Length: 247
Image (cartoon, rainbow, N blue to C red; front, side, top):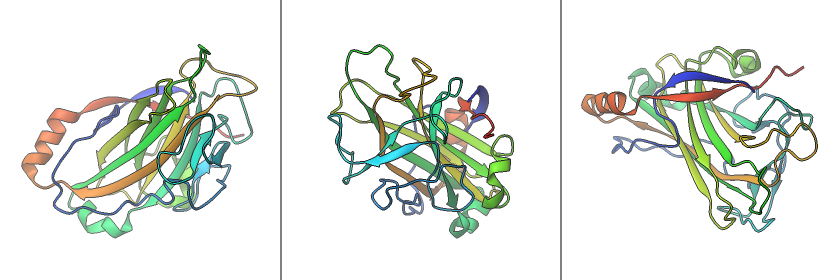
């Protein structure tokens, strides 16, 4: 994946606390990886399925206990086929159906807030990577067309980061929030472990990197005054990471 700057509404591991006029339920499917033991090795083309690079769903290991429940995702490689130099992120994607929120989105006051937890192995190895992130993006069109759209067709994108320490007993949180564009038809939720310390071209790319308890909630920005505060106080430049084309 290459790096490119993009202006985002809210990001960098923070979220804005607003008293919502209407709170909604979590709409990520299997955000704790308790339902399925497999993910698809491709970019997603339908709602509610985790798809992306090589990962595995595991129980407690390497001194790390799932943040919640009995399972968590273990990031392994930066492509669906294994390790590769020059691609620095192991990513999972899920397309989110937002049709139930059409009226709120059309009002221009639908706030999407994502949250997730990350952990990694400790030890003395100076090459252990530390960075994780959650990315939210909005698209117009059909989920089936997403693999051909993701590189340049997003209407909005925001990324929140988490930097993990060597204490396997603690989990670090990443959050990201954005106003959903009025013309958006679906959201894409992406979680990433990043080789921010050393880019392994072969062998083990991620020595013990885990994620759990991912959620997404859509709430109503309660008043125009609050929206103005949100726009003036939370505009940030987020780092956008792209993956190379899947040949």
